[in-house]
Length: 436
Image (cartoon, rainbow, N blue to C red; front, top):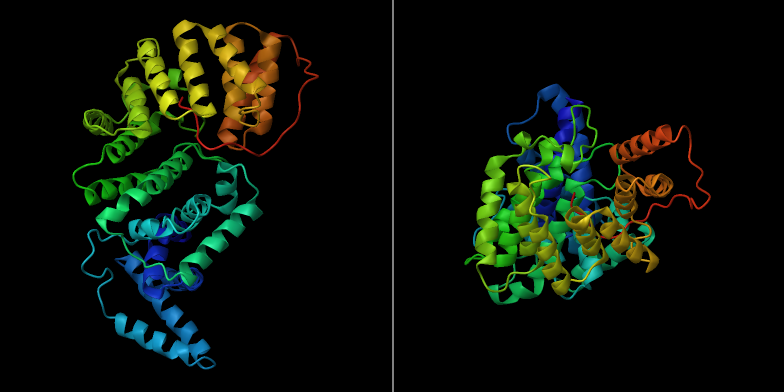
């Protein structure tokens, strides 16, 4: 029972919170109500069983817990009494009010948090923390910032929403473009964290992947005719998510792209992703998400790493880099160049990035470099890069994978290889993750 409740919390808590925020109009009160509702569930469900609709039960319980809280405050503040009456009257109303284009509180809350009156760093941080369920530490690592800095940004953003009385609603169609880019960015980062967890004992967080895909589908429905970047983002998610079952073995250990059993790839998701990326690229206005999806599509259609059309992938990265210059995209391109032209070509690009000070704290840059040095049979350089990557990695399966690669190289050398330049660990990493 305990595990079932934990699963419900992981899968439903953000959606319950979004509904409570809509009903209560207050982040802090909604968060308290959510916690009280789950505390009540922990006490009641083991005795009475899990209700048929756990989310509705949690919303209803959280709402009444909040009413009790407000009623206690109302003894000292008469202005709270009106709010109590409003909430009690609303208790019998449908969970979702009529008149909205789409009946999903979580998506509506994402649009609220992405209001242009809130600075972009703050609205991204708040949305990832409050709506998507990432921890403050995970958000901080995504932005190369300290957790305290992110926490302050979130508090300021909440205060801005409350003081400016920003309405809890999906904006008018004419207002969508100014919010859409941030909304897409939120869903992309949410999916990234699910696709490759930044820390912990799992490679994949299926709950985040599933929620990001669900929200992207809703967004596509919300914006007829289909927007190419929304199609591109959903295609990108589907094409990457299609590999999930092959990315770890039965013990949860990381499996490299070249070693994956492609029979395990989800062909239904791939077919849908391919159709979406074709539609996105056929329209004017496609951008970086559609281009990334096109790269994922080339991988998805290849029978093996050897059969992959690496020249086409390099060409797509070239276009992507012109549109969106980024060290992470350059790193991805370097890996593709290495596959097309040989590992030395990839080493040259990654070395240049590191010498410029880009990605020096990014474990995947060092891991990619180590693998290329290994293929060049430059053992000491490979060992140094693996050690650096291992020191920076925070995800346990990645740590075990890197440790195994390092141990194999040292065994070939007849013992540990000296590395006087090893600089030690850090826990920072930049936004984005390279493709496999």
